[in-house]
Image (cartoon, rainbow, N blue to C red; front, side):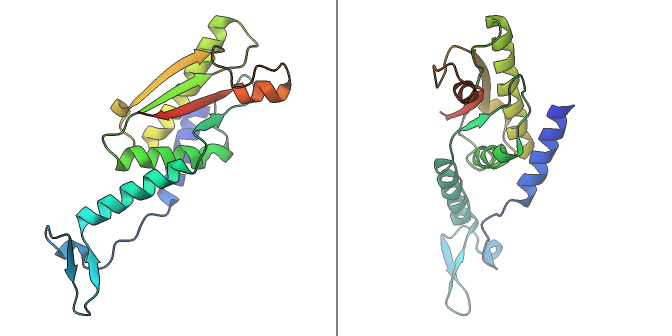
Length: 171
């Protein structure tokens, strides 16, 4: 149920995201890379608007840490990571050929089997949220590393917190 609520929340957030504006009259330009309006100003065409959207999506994900962090023993996406998921979901929706690997991770507490299952739930939660924003499920692979790829090998709460994450890797 929490996963469903998180997915719906992200879908609503994605609907609120700002999108690049297309100049008036763009639909009237048929296939040309640009056209002149009566005032002499250049008008964007669907092709250039698509290229602009792709570039904006690439810039947005390059400015965001490609990870979603989780609370202990949880796999629901916290509100502070909705922007990350939104950026990557938008990227996948705009750049149709892009593929993303979502690697779920856990800290070392718990059994190997439990941590693998928890890592998988975390990866799948992010995958579902990406799809809710418009990403194609065929372009997302969700796997679990369990506790095998820690970012921080320390034994403190802060170290464990760094390891409870899902990494988003563009391929």
